[in-house]
Image (cartoon, rainbow over all chains, first blue to last red; front, side, top):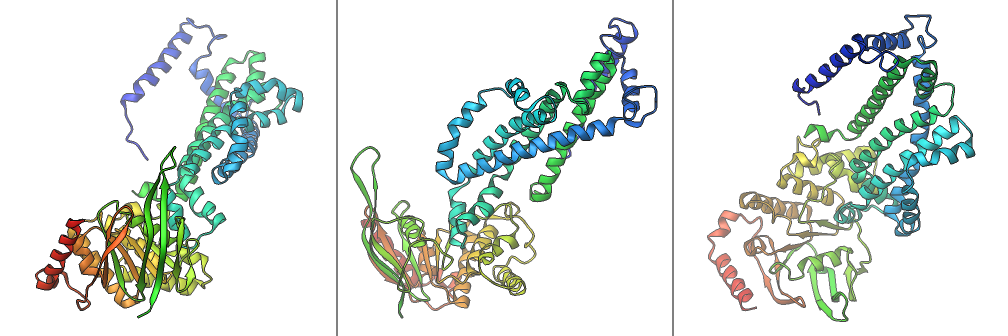
Amino acid sequence: MIKKFDLLGLILPIFLVFLWGYVTVTNIAPSYILPSPSKVVISLFDFAFGTNSSSPYSGQMLEHTLMSLKRVCTGFLLGGGLGFVLGIASAAVQYVNRIFATSIHILRAMPGIGWLPIAMVWFGVGEKTSIFLIGIAAFFPIYMNTLQGAGAVDPLQYRAARMLGAKKLQLLTSIMIPSALPQILVGLRIGLSISWAYVVLGELTGVNKGLGAVMMDARMLGRLEMILVMMVCIAVLGRITDQFLLLLYRFIRPFEIKK
Amino acid sequence: MKPILKIENISKYYTKHGTKDRLHVLDQLSFEINEGEIVTLLGSSGCGKSTILNIIAGFEKIEGGAVYLKGEKIQQPSSSIGVVFQNPTLFEWMTVYENIQFGLKYKKIDKKTERESIYEYINLLELKGFENFYPSQLSGGMQQRVAIARVLILSPQILLMDEPFAALDSFRRAKMQLLLQHLAIQLKCTILFITHDLEEAIFLSDQIYILKDLPTQIIQKVNISFERPRRYEDLCGDLEFMNIKSEIFQQLRHE
């Protein structure tokens, strides 16, 4: 898993940062279009540790981060949980699949963002709308991958388990779900990354707290560097939660690294 | 000796897709297996051997006849009929220990007895030191030994083996045949063995049923009465062994 680090890959990002610094220092890109890298870094530190008390965002990172994280987790668990349960049920019982598959594919044709206006009507501006959007976003990839993984289990595995004494429901928990786990993980990771995309969308539409809310606030106040700081924070958080998923997976499936 | 397994007039056919034509795989096939014997079904590939085994195991439905284990009709798979498949079919996400433990979970046994029993079979199948390995880390022969252990630990009334050593090289296969023979003596197993390997059949069996295909029929029953434990190096040069081999070979060629 730990890949050998390729120094060649560093050249482009370093060059881009220098280019960014260059165009801001020389005013090719004025600061109201693109703030300088140093300003973004200083603002990031201030946002995290409160080093400059004059800024309204000073030291507020934890509060906003936890808010966004809470929304992502709630939506992800609700939507993803439903996707998982329905995926397994559809793979296990043909009737469930036949009843739900068509409807789900019709719903899936609607891009997640398209749910925003109607969600605002139903749930009002704010918390519930964000969670609804995240739930919708997380549901589809997790449902699809769970169904695909659970449906692709080698029939011989079920035969082996039955001849060892496993009955219907036991086949589900002891064969189907563990066999499908690698594919389910793929769904979880896609779902989680889309969840982070949709928390930004949800929070842009008018909540007080959360990284997306700060982003929108900063845009209105003309604090461009804070917009960039939020982008960095969201990217890093997305990465951290993804790694957490992988870590959890490796804890359940230690042999895939032992190999 | 009394029969433990009775196969009575079993018939099985597949309907050709889109037609009413039936392909008769089995037509009124009957035979018996005595308790404590190793019986082999010998026939070329695709002669319906595996179908017979799948029916006895309760995996496949039949159109006629019945299979009785100790007088009881077999309706579905159960742990009293153990199966070792051609591929080990282990549970990849479980360790060797957990794979062997799998069937015991569905029996009410206290933890201590369970543990002792698992280690007994780990030792019997020469898997000591590998209990915490995962199947993908083991050789094919070891995987197959795990597959045998997880079945034998449930003390099945009969063990069905579907060309279990076909994927092994000849040296490993000879070792496994010897090991199986020792297990059969020690645990007093009844085994139905499927193979297309003539020497393997003669080496392992008390009875050999020679099969012909479509519909599958038994064309000859051969008694093999060499003393056990049989040793490969002794039998290889034995005149009687070679005679039996030659007879069966001629029989198969005429079909």
